Length: 119
Image (tube, rainbow, N blue to C red; front, top):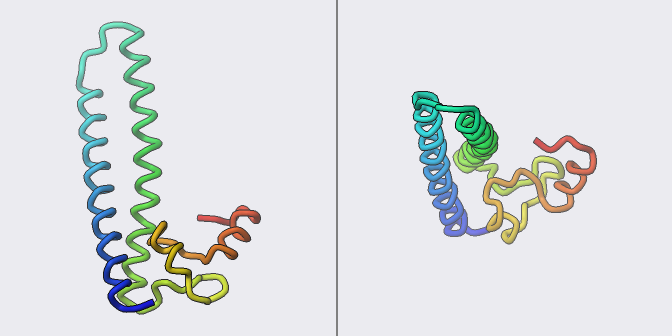
C-alpha cells in the first residue's frame, strides 16, 4: 500500500475518532440531563431507565471502537499499520477501506471469530 493511501486511511481514523468523542460526550450530557430531571411517575422512570441503558451500551461499543482506532493510529506511527497481527501478512486495501482499524486480514479474522478470541 502506498504512503498516500495510508494518509487517507489515517485521515479517516482521525475523523472517526473525533465523531466518537463527540458521540460519547453527547451521551454523557444526555445521561446527566436524565439524572437531573424530575421523573413524575413509573412510566417516566421506566423510559428514562431504558434510554439510559441504551446509551450505556452504545457508549461502551463506541469506547471499544475508539480504543481500536487509537491502537491503529499508534501502529501508523510505529510503521506496523496494515499488517495482520496473526499471520503478519499485509491486510488487504479493501478490508482497510471498510474497517481502517482492522487488526487482522480476512482469513485470520474468521479464525479469531470462530475461536471466540476476537477483542
